[in-house]
Image 1 (tube, rainbow, N blue to C red):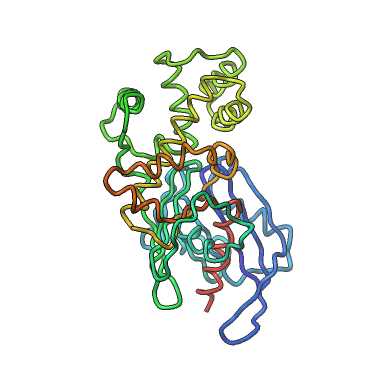
Image 2 (cartoon, rainbow, N blue to C red; image 1 turned 30 degrees about the vertical axis):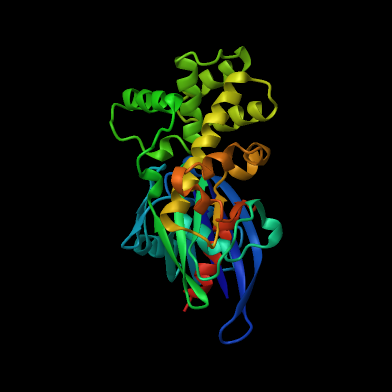
Length: 343
């Protein structure tokens, strides 16, 4: 028996073909047959990606599939937040000739994946005082910002996706106040979501704000790369990677300041989520950015912003904080979900 799992993001799509072996009536094991990665924006829809992937194994037909999607899933339908795709299970089942397909919010999938993590898959920033039977929170900045949580139900957890990344960005100092006003004027809207700041697109926006308001001088090398990104139509350049790498190397003051603002805003929002849930089971930082900038996340700025909650700071200091190092936690979550809902 075979199943197909996918992690469908605004930047990339990862597909994994899995062979399932049933060990007992209640337990199943699986092994990966093949895996491939695609640039999402290079395709008009998910269907041609899956068809191209499955064409390499003509004699294998998946009986079911589960796709983790970067966007809200309502009535088995998803309008991707950062990609102009509309996916629904009925159409996918017909077009792909797969009997059963499930769509899962990507951060719900990340939450399922959290349950399958090993010790080497995480780096702990704060040990805290983990409590059994307490909620677990999951947050992650990538192309956008995802937030989800797990609530214990006996020996298992019930998993809830959310759209917390689209709540209001809450500035905490003069620089962040200026950033908020800059984005309101640039986007011609009053509501600025925290995703506009704490995400890959947020890193680029912070850089532009600091550059345009002359907080730091722009270097010629980085300027050339950023200008190319601003001018190109398909946006194949990744400005967040350029900026974070320069900051990591300490080779560009504007990039260093950009990442300073980003990391502190990320820490503050992570603390907000932890406080709202009192996630004494821990908070896991997933997404595509944190693990790539691990040294910057470890230097104290993130944790200081996370803990800076005024009168209730002592509460948040007791919550375990972990960075997910595995880039495929969402894909693992898709497999685990598909295994649970295969019958």
